[in-house]
Image (cartoon, rainbow, N blue to C red; front, side):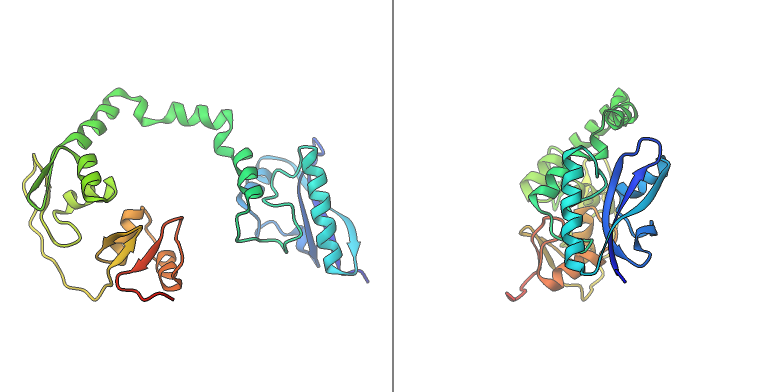
Length: 247
């Protein structure tokens, strides 16, 4: 009995093939373990799935999956396949082909999405735009040194603009030095000693994992912590603990 097969998902109304895959058992019916483009497509269209060909050897199924996907792509199909197939389903490595494909079919680049984002962009409101601009131009004091604004302070110190804003909001920087906007009173604060290790992100030092995560704009520190322990980049940033020995 042939155990492996190649299947394809298609649009019932247009017959467009939007996804090709390789599987066994009931894999072809599964819709939960799919990429976001697949899930978005099936939520907006009437779709169905069919098995195209059975195989006794898994490698042959992978090979046919790759050939069929490539063939369909040349016809403008398989928009929900991230790669040409033949990799065993999921690939952690972003090839140049994948980058080009994701750029071409990125839903955020469609005319509809661009128009929607433009219409709903709060910066289109002149009052809001001016308020944001004025906020960034407000002079700040970082450890007693005056800067003409958040942008200037960030450039001079070598941190993100959001980091300067966060320092001024809470009243101190990562080393416990006072920080404030020029038109506000200095906030009272207490520095609590912790056992947190200092972290370097692209050569910039942060006193803790939480501080580094805030600078990167992420709430969950777990992925960053794993990257630090594995001594590997996180979201394209070089990350390591201060005084960390080379692996």
